Image (cartoon, rainbow, N blue to C red; front, side, top):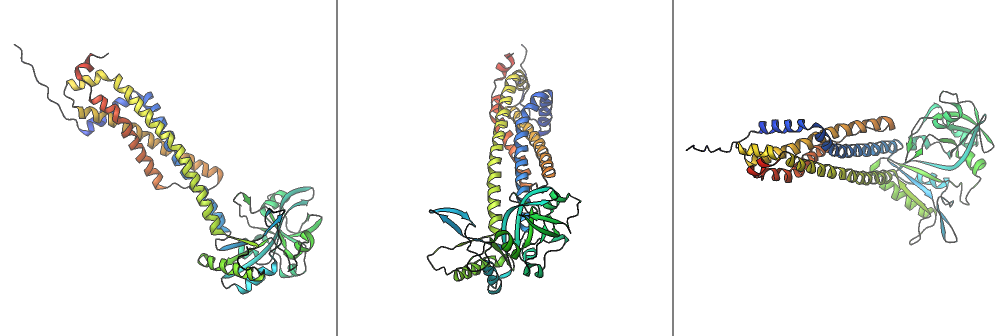
Length: 421
């Protein structure tokens, strides 16, 4: 009688598992590609959103810092009509004299500049543009860190004599004279008044959606007398003034000193509310950073949903693969493959699909982020943690998505598997 030969389970090396997994995935290239698609889109979305969010945040911080991070803004109070607030700046409670007093009496204040601001129409030889008119003093360029790139800023003599001279922003220059047009020496009309253009400010770009170059600067005395004509009982009314601290560390001290001096000058005593409002650039940067950070987290969470969908897709495809390859599994078990070998192969296939999709997604995300940074002109920022997180998520998704299909494959009965069609 013939003697039956017992087949002993054989161990499979890691290299053999990888080779068999690659062969199985390559033999079903279309299915493998479609399976990876969900992971690719998810990882690319996370990388892109994170990069764009950080790039926009950095660009805005740079723009705000270019205007000075060691400055505070003092604005006029709020007028009320019938108990209804008319908004900040509607009451003439801050004066040029307040600004001059702060410059002399606040030790932490390195520089102070007052301004009057109005929206106006400016005309030059048939060209008409809507812009912002700023009447200010000689300290404005230093306090706000913006200087003429052509010509000069107005002088003390211009300020003392209410002279109708103007320094325009680069946006106004381009709108009225063209990018290469000569503006200095010409006359522009602002609300029926003619102003001689004596300078063009350097380009600063936009901050918070406001074009810093779409402005015209004239002497504060001229604007108060000819444009606004609105003086308070205590001096020359202004829209507000900027106070420059010695450095960022003394910003809080400067704000404390300015607040107390203004309350004394305006005869405000507790518990009366202030008739002015103070903000600083550091608060603006922090607020914007928080908003961008929350927005980035929110969109990244939405993008993460596609990763979950991608993981479900991998699990579904692997379950289908187990059904399709039931006979193959039976043959392998019949020739000695152990349950752990079958489990390892299917887990390896799932992880390989996910990691390959993650790598492609990271590359795609970096490419899209670079394109966006180039087109919209903000810094290209890719954080290491986002790439590490991308690879980590890819591995975890593949591992989790492959557990059930791999376990099902490993638990197949070899006799039943061989009988399947």
